Length: 585
Image (cartoon, rainbow, N blue to C red; front, side, top):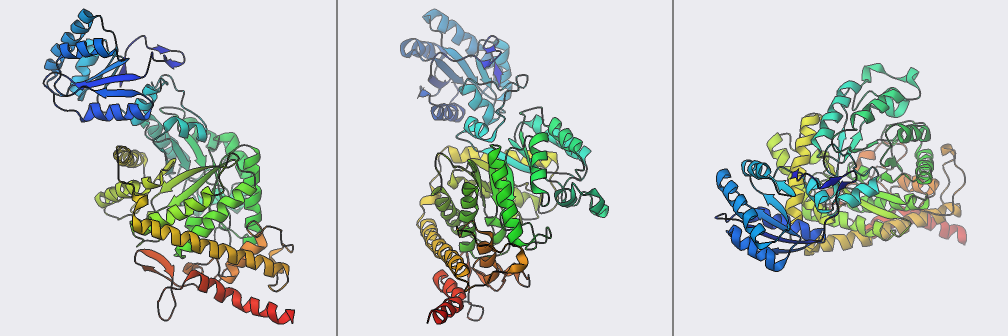
């Protein structure tokens, strides 16, 4: 996008005189898509717009401008560059003769746009190469030129600035700090990504403050070998160019608060990602017990809340990654948000991972995500703002790169039905290899194209009958499961279910949904369960699941018939309820 000299100040573009736009394609040009798309975008930003038609002569445009007195006259022309030059000169002459002086906007193919720039007189020239951020920023009268880097630097501000488009996040981390820093610089310069999510290797996540315990044969395994405060500062400095993306990083799995403080001080962590029941003996990412990790996660949430840092709780999708029934994932999503709110978090990032487990149909997937959103939104209020973050599941990506690009576009399209604030882009190549900077940039552009198409007017998939039915079933069943967890709490308080004293936390807290003992016990009993946990001494692992009509449900291990959630919960708790009845006699 090119802008006319004299329309910038130290604060960016000057405030515009008004918010009315008259648009048309000029001369013999009958191509209207560009003009109409621009007018739609302007309407979304509060402008009143009018389309004057196709193939309108410069003289007719001048007469319309005189009569209708728009603040802006937006003209499109996509034919011959030299033809455009003559038409532009005629338009200027006709406007002068009519004493009409709207601010002029021009859109055309790159060669035609170059002619418009040469002729001058336009407040902005669009060639079709512009990022949507630049166009929105122009319409809002905000700075977008690369020499005026005034991009919002907090999550909430960035989301508000980008609306109605979601901001984009992408994971990035090559084995070495040097290669990662150079990649970050390239990504920032491309201006297509709003949030770079650093991925440190396991040595950094677990042993950053204990370098003597590191296994250096694993340096760079699964992420960047970040070993010092200076490494984090170097990576952040590399991002201070282009569109100045926000930065964030995965949380530590040990010395959690100390690591959180480091991230806040070095990369201005845009939001924290904190596990509730994971990153411990359940998934092998650390030696902590489930009870201890829950308590430490709650402590980390409260610490970030005290610093005003938004929080994401990495919980629900970890159950689906292990083939848990959909209802477990939905209930876990509510528990994650509930714990964040109780910890005092004011801005909450709710992650919705689609395509997980593999085999889930788009309709059943969307129904599951809407059920999660419905329960989470019941907690929202002035003191608990919820940002919806959607993403595709990595395991769903084909290895064939062309097919993977199509899958990324489709998953983005389906997930847009959730009206997300954040789109976590998964690199199309990641089923085959780690994404480099070029592939991150290309993946973001694919996602942006899908988003742009969705916002031009898509049928509302969230209103599909099968989607609504699945949403309602899961919300009902999740409440059954949550009631079951509350019953575990009552049984613990009454002593019917013994507290596992090996965990080190002997007191049962007053709230069943935040009490570490209750939640850990619910996992041990199998209320919160997944097939992949079989054999884990801290879990149950006895649930059997299958994809039935596109949904992941608990099934009877013998008959393979679906087991209703109320029946599943009752079977698990029945033995303890009978014990309590006997003791009450």
